[in-house]
Each structure stands twice: as C-alpha cells, then as structure tokens.
Image (tube, rainbow, N blue to C red; front, top):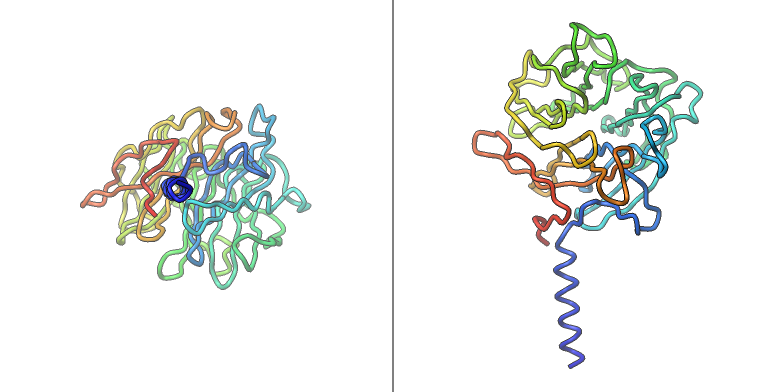
Length: 306
C-alpha cells in the first residue's frame, strides 16, 4: 500500500512539474516582487527575463526605479535574482524608470534602461545577471520603451516609439536606429518604421529571415512583418494579443528549445493592480505563411511538455 501511495505522489509531482503556472512569480514565493515589462532573452541556453519592478504600494508608475532578473533553464523552475541594478545610484540617472532590455555583444551584456521616462542609459556586465557597471555617464539617446536587437551579422539596432519625445513626423510610431559596434552610440538617425500610430511597448524578433515588430496600439498588442530590420514601412498584420488583464501590456518574444514564447504582464494576479503587475508567458504558434496565431492568455499553461 505504501508503494501505491508513493507511486500516486510521484505521478502527481511529474504532472505538476510539466506545467508552467502563470504568473511566473507567486506572492507566496520567497523574495516575491512585482516583475513587470518582461524583456525575455536567451543566453547560454537559459532564459533570462529582465523586468522593471512595481513596488507593493504603487498607485502610479512614478515609483518604478530599479530592475530585476528572473532565470530559468526549462521554463518550469525559476530563479528570482531580485533587484540587480539600481540606476538611481548613478549620479546621472533619475526619475521614472520604465521597461528595459538587454543585449549581448563582444563579450559584454548591455542593459538598456530609461530614466526620466525617455532618456536611455546603459550598464554592462560580463554575465547575464550582473554585477552591472556604468557603461556611460549620460543618456545615449531619447526614446520610449527601448528594445535592442543584434542581427545575425552582428549589427545592433535600437527601437522604441516617440510618443513622449519629438522625433521626426508628428504622431507616435515604431522607430529604429543602428547602434555602433560599441553598443552605446547611435550610428545614424532614427527612422520611422510604421505607417500606423502606436501607443508604446515596441519589441522586435526575427524568425526564418522575417523581422517581426510588435507594439501596443490602444489596449491590444499588434504586429508587423518586414524583410529588413529598418523597413519603411513594415506591414501591419493584425492583433498579436488582446488587452492584458488590468495592465497596459508590454510584451517580448523568444525562441527557446525550438519553441516560441510570448512574455507579457498582467495586473489581476498576486493581489496586483494596474500599477502592480506580474510577468507571465504563453506559447506562440505560427502559420505556414509566417503570420502568428493570436495569443490567448492563461493562468495555468499546460502546453509545455516535459
């Protein structure tokens, strides 16, 4: 009988370990934080999620001031490294700090973070989790929600949108620019990449030679496709994801172990709110023509098999 109970327990454990429970972090977890604006990256065969942090008593976004890292080797078990970078400790960085991103080049990991909402600062580290040191002593450019992409040929690009800064034509659009090899200077002007106006939360990824851009447009996340990293203009394809529950969505996408995943946040979990958000993820599915099947949000993602 004891062996029977042990076998039942073992099966239950295996089944539960085959599921990724959204949100990634639970309020009952040791060291819990509200991890928002998840910028997912794959480095050295592991997934790293770089996030802004909402404070527990937040009633607006002005209290966003530091950044955390979550790490996983299987998308089931997560290491919460907690706050790893506090840009306000730098003499030149201050104000509200929104969504970040991290890119790797020339043996350095570069952490791009906004301060004063649109001033882009950079820190760097020899490892994906830090320690991080100042890479600059002033902003490298101004844009909202920076995201950085290093193409297969080694050329790096920075993207964002200009709804809080005056760049180019009136309106808020997806914007992109080349980065120099040092990763801390622009190598040319900002280029408008979308005909359509977007709200915020620009992201880029590449699959099968196609460049995908996504951004929040009103309450939903839409996406565009192009055959170049600086198109004029990318082709709008439709809605990628619906309105995130009780949160202005900010998303990213990665390929990991030959599968694609969509990372986002929501404010209806962990006793959260519009200003206390938690990172989640879902599987992504592509059609034969490269277009994306719209994301459906879940709180118990059983699509990841052991």
